[in-house]
Length: 183
Image 1: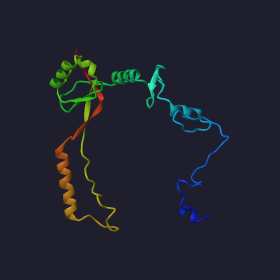
Image 2: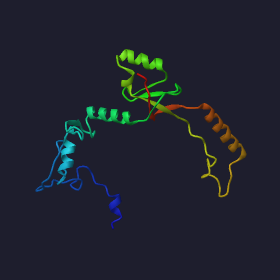
Image 3: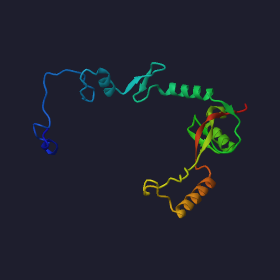
Image 4: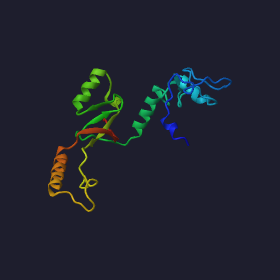
């Protein structure tokens, strides 16, 4: 192996940088990219839409199903979720509106403004997200073999974790249960 090959400089205008190849055939996408015998890749690169897996209609490239079928899948997934009454603590997430709500007044106001029923919102009970606690092995990679954290650091970790636990939820994520709405 030539060690100078790795350090070799090839300028942009050099004949070594590129060459014209003639006598080849293959698939070329609309954007001019050559794909050889890979017709599927060339067609995908050159297209703007694909066929929806569910209904067969045109669907924007990058998605497997069209917007209408995604909505139908969302409704089906929501309807399959277990339902329970909301205890009015925490947050609710609307799968329909991609919006979080903290109380029924906020939901009613939104429904009034949008002229929709509460049942359309597909409300999901949220689960809290908490800040992570520090482990007592914090910094162990920096310690000498068989080394231990100084007592002051251990106390600081305990104090930090206490504050984090007292802080409570810092955000919310949609959970696995839908809100039971009494009609």
